Image 1: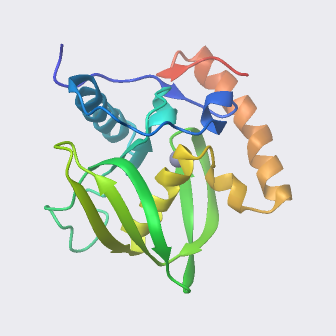
Image 2 (image 1 turned 30 degrees about the vertical axis):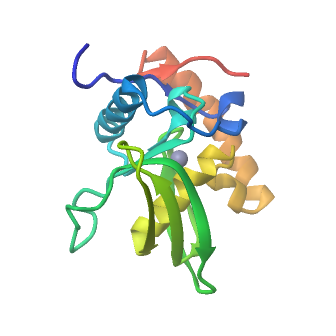
Length: 187
Ligand SMILES: [Zn+2]
């Protein structure tokens, strides 16, 4: 097996983006390889986060890699999160424009808590807690939403959500025609 493989992306509309992911009980080679493949796929698509349902995997795993998007990137920051769970959210919110690898070419401003607490397991099976704020916290919230079948458009008004959902159908058809790296199953 290659060290990294590109995984086909699941695009809206697709029922698999709406299913809850399953808790990981066995951290095996396949899981670690999937995380590496997700990371490679995310970087190739110029994303900063990716969750298992976006590559048609049903496990509770996400990858977050802000790369150089923040002024002081912490190179010791974890990339791979198994069974991540938010333990608290700040009372302060901010609004920032978000996109999603499963909803290409569309951006919208989403209101989220500025800071969060997180519990997760690493690839060695060790449990951790961390506090995150700013873009890191936002990205973690976006990806953990995916594990619950929630998309960033769900945080918008129904009107905005409908507009994006409608455009997504058209964009997905175009991308399938262009034979882009996606899973062409609309359900
Ligand atoms: Zn997303």
